[in-house]
Image 1 (cartoon, one colour):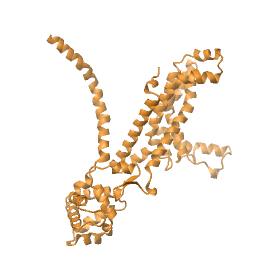
Image 2 (spheres, helix red, strand yellow; image 1 turned 180 degrees about the vertical axis):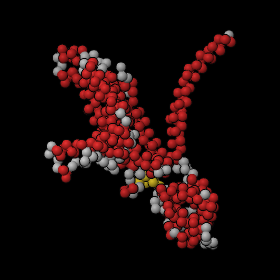
Image 3 (cartoon, rainbow, N blue to C red; image 1 turned 135 degrees about the vertical axis):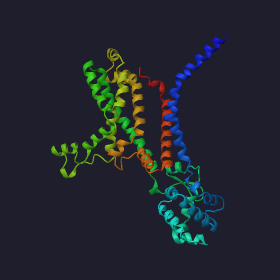
Image 4 (cartoon, rainbow, N blue to C red; image 1 turned 120 degrees about the vertical axis):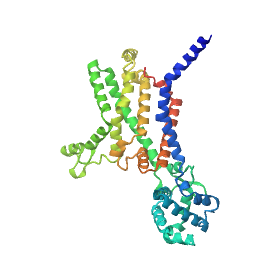
Length: 403
C-alpha cells in the first residue's frame, strides 16, 4: 500500500517540478518587475523620511488657507539643518520631488539649507522668507504637504492630466500643462493606423507567397524575413537616410523635377515619418500569421466557388476572406500591441509631432522620475489588457488558431 501511495505522490509532483522553472522564470522576469513598478507608482517616502516633523505638522495642524505657523517654519529649518549636515544629497532629492509638483522651486532648498547653517534666528518665518521670498507662497507649502504623502495617487492623476486642487477636489490641470491624454490618443491613433496599413500591404504579400510556385514562394518569404532579422536600429537609421531633407527620396524627386530644390518635402520628424517607418518594420508580423493560414487553404475552394457561379469578388469575400480571418486577427492583434509600445522608431524619426507615450515613459525614467514613469506604464498596461479582453469578447481568442 505504501509503495502505491508513494508512486501516486511522485506522479503528482513530477508535473509540478517540470513546470516550476517556467513559473520561477515568469515570477522573476514579469511578476516581480510588475509589482515593483506598481509600488513605485504609488509609493514615495523620500520627503516624508527626510522631513517627518514638518510633514506631520502640515498634515495635522495646517489649515491650508494661510501661511503655516511659526512652529512649522521652525521645524522645517531644524530638519533642513540636520539633514544637510548628515547628507547634503537628500536635500536635493527632496527638492526634485517638490519641484515636480511646484516647478521652479528646486533652487530654494539648497540656498535655504546653506544659509541657515550660518544664521541664529528666533523668528524662523521671517528668516526663511528673507532667505527666499517663495517661502511665503502657499503653493510651495501645498507641494511639500503633497510630496510628503508616502502613498498617493498623484502620479496617476498627473499621468491623466489631473491634479488635486487646494480644496481637495480632482480637477484638470491648466490647458498649457496638458500633454499625456493627447499622447495616449496619438499612440492609439498610430497603433490603429499602422495596423490598417500593415493589413492593406501585408494581405496581398501573404496571398502572393501562399499561391506562388514553391521556388518563388521561398524567395518571397526570404525577402519578408530578411528585414525581420535585421536590427531594428539599423532599419530605423535606414529610414532616416531615405526620408531626411537631403535624403534619397527628396534627391530623386528633385532630380526628376517633381520638387524644387528649395522646397524639399518634410518626410521625417513628423507623424508621416513615424507611420512609414513603423509600418515597414512591423509588416512581417502581419504577413507571417496571414501566410500561415493562407498556405493551409486548398486552392480548390476558389475553383469550386467559381464553378458554382461566383465571380472573383464573390469568391474572395464569401469563401477566401472568411477562412483567412484567423490569420488577419492574429496579425492585427500582434501589430497593434507592438505598435502601442514602440519607442526607438518614434524617438528617431518622429520628432516632437511623432512622439508616442513610450517616449514620455523613457523620458521620466531617464530623469529619475520613476513614480510618474511607472504610473504611465501601468496605465498603458491596463489599457492593453482591457483591449485584449474586449477582443476576446467580440472575436474570441480561440479564432486565432493558425491551423
